[in-house]
Length: 150
Image (cartoon, rainbow, N blue to C red; front, side, top):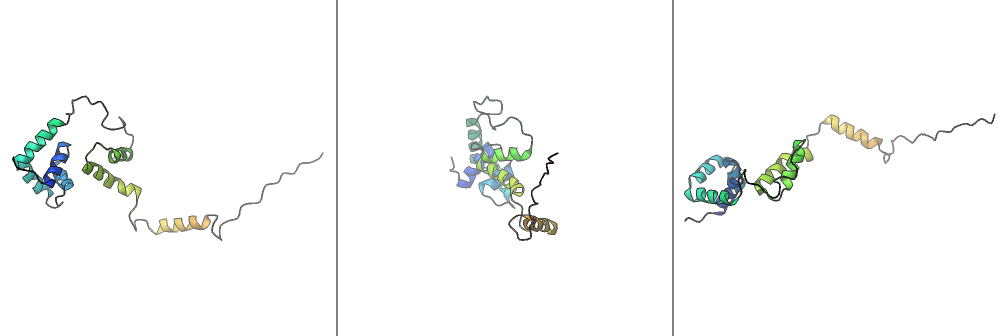
């Protein structure tokens, strides 16, 4: 039997986890531009196919009863919480976790220069209105109540 390279082993791990051919090739380290071609060549390699078959036999199928749930929650209300759980799930392949992190990135950290002039003006006005700035409005005087002695 032919010995697999590191990239081929990574491809086998991702394919046995259920990742698509092209995405498994990208996760294994193949170039994005040629990932589909590389995945096709890998799937034609008999050693790779037998390694995928052996790896999928070791992992339980979708019908098998698992002792622990695959995901921490059964139902998700929003995609962000699902992606966070995928990113932090230790049992999922690293490629899948990295993809979830890439998908979450725009929601957690906006790109530089993505904020416009109006957003910058609002932020500047908020900064001026804070109590640390010299032009910040002063606190109003305390309200006094007059009690009549009648």
